[in-house]
Length: 374
Image 1: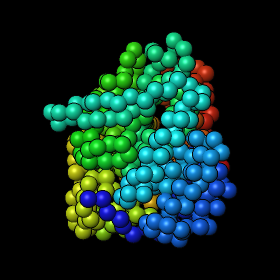
Image 2: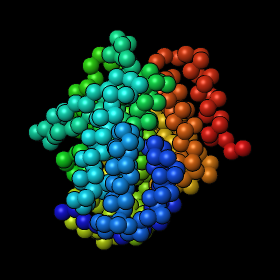
Image 3: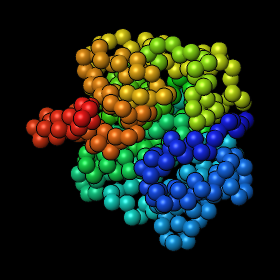
């Protein structure tokens, strides 16, 4: 059963306001809602979901479907553990699909049935592609977020990949989150593979991109030979064992968010948390032994409070891996996310679209701006 957990809305705003702006919510709206909210879980005035829903409804009345969708996305944040949040999520999806008619690229929603554990798992995929005939054969990038940032929150990233990169994009929810009906489990990469093949079409080359907890799945697809390139942005790959007590002290409700994604009924004791995290370790799966693989880009901030530096540094020994540690940045390099994403697309263009001098020059220029402190 879904369960609530300790969560301070003031601390959540302090950490995630930048993220909400990245979804397309104006600063003024965020500050207005911040001033009204005093409880993360209560339904009614001052409650997180209630106050965000008010903003979503106002945006709907104004005919601003994409903004309404983002506000409802904030209303359901960070987990679908209450009826009000589940309702907000349904409204987020409805507004998003209403806004899709105005997207600056081709868009399609598909309901997939992908192989999983000898049966099938339903997967909702949002597909973005360049308009016209060139879109069908463009390289395909499968994209997912983490435990609290799902496919609709990656809207702007998807558009960047299409418009700047010239790629097709398939955005899906990580198992255990969003529309996924199965728990997050160590074999979730099977779902990603199935979704990738289901929407591949005429794409000659494929890549994976994972944000935060989605990062290990993007890396795993590279390390197991399922894609031609991949990007792990802020992913916890389990390069070294984690202390259970430290895991349970992670800020802003992260232990409860993860526990709900794996469908636990309550917060686990520290020793169980450590065992659970170890199950997802790519080291435990034997995948972190340095060797030649498809190109992999691993990126994170140098001051991440959630993911240890070892989870980035482990890839420095891989001959085909590129590692960017962003000085002074936090989880997923949030403070430098725009230049990081631009550089990421440039890196993917070099890997997927041929060795073009212009792409290499652009990549070199962008890289210098993010990995070297001024």
